[in-house]
Length: 253
Image (cartoon, rainbow, N blue to C red; front, side, top):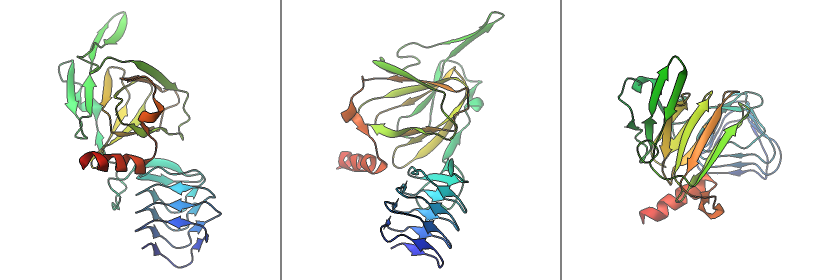
């Protein structure tokens, strides 16, 4: 059952999941509001009409939420922006999932791979060649890229407040390289999560199938290159976190 505090204004049409915690003076303003399971709403936050707050998300005190919030995200501010992700649906910690410091691996011989402890996700350190003329990084299949790409796309000019990704693939594998600037990459296998700040063109992330991937906090100059193992197939996408968890459950039975 949801846990309500006194003084909150809750729309009669709001759909509220199990174990939701709603603090004092919270306003659910308008129709079409959905709070998934294990949501936490701190004091005096406002949830706008038509907003869905994803499973395990945390809306911090005073936030004004005008857009839907992904599962396990932490949001704050007016208008609300994502500032991190929770370790788990019942976590009261603001800390992000395990944060990988890619710069701590710069001393390793290249090419090499570093497990990220989220399914088979790995950080790839690619060859870096520099001299007076400049620098380059080079990768080959399968040494630096663990599959033969059938598609690529580049993501750029992303406003800092925007999210990319927010889906999983049933079969497609991906390899992410931030060619310029920086962005945060969240990897989630349904049990373990980690977060990597990509800010070097000579490092990449291998993301196998059945990983919920989100990219956020893009720098204004960020350019993210994504190599994909399959062509675009709409039926390969799992576009909600609930669908992702359900597919994981089916594969375990």
